[in-house]
Length: 434
Image (cartoon, rainbow, N blue to C red; front, top):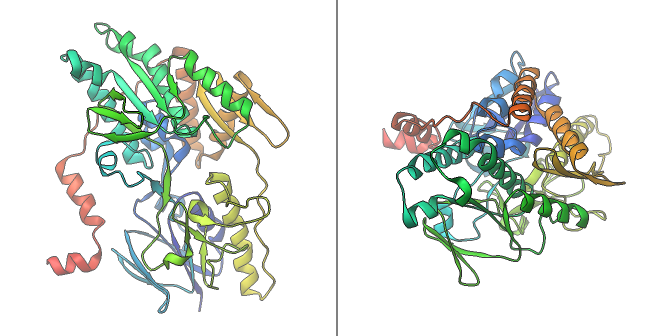
């Protein structure tokens, strides 16, 4: 009988693992709440109407067409029973011989309920679309606004100086300079302000000092108001309250300040560390188990090179998945497992057109060449040739015209919202309701 592997999450780690196990002697079930894989590094381009959502989203069933040993299920995960080796979901109960948890992270609001309720996160394609709709609707409303309401509309506040915050702030600044004045010739956008707030002393904290300073210089030259050592205390939908008591009026607070692991119910709290990550050994096995593996952002592995765990990056997730593929085969053949060793290929971030910073293990560089390197490497990570082509065409048009044609306000209908909520309701609750 084939060994059953249940993979929770179709992010970079889960998808990579399933793709490399297709056609093997394992029976694989891939479970995710969405029916598509999402390319997270480009969410900000969807939010600022530079790319279509379909360009960075890939239907899971299309990826695994005609792969008879891989079964895709779209469902919310209810709990894991480690004793019976079952995963409970809204689509039923799935038994496993090996379980792989690759559920990734969601936005961390650090316990602030107002910010969670009113701010805009950007951890999924749907959230990026919601932000795009909000930004575009705000400018439509600005045509008839005045006074304090107009001021709140014309201030956009981004919280978090990591790659997402930096890239989004730069993209919003380019939107202000190149596109909005042409779309709204009867409006004055000189009063539009983009604020980037970072609680720490520098942007892009994992990168080198020169990249941190250059990225800040780039943003400020584009008109972004960068505020370091600035902590957000609260938000009421109209004004951001800072820890020093000052306020920034805004109707748009974009929260990119932190992440927390999506830990399924059934994992012991003693296995969790800061950021809601699960402790694993050198083979990505959850501590104290032989049949549960944890990959990607949610995995916490202490090594000599990474005493505080690996960075939560796509490259780490993909590398862990590749290593686990080999170890699953080693387990089946009774061989010694290979520990995971991560060799960082470097980190990078783009700020705007011809502006990017790249840190490689042996050198750092910034500017036009860094920007082309960033575009090339991200394009190569896109799954399908069709999507690569669409993204390249959009980028080429944007490069030569400083414009896009994707500024569509697409709001969900009530029926669509209700259907999605029903699909995410656990099966037991639906039966009880009937």
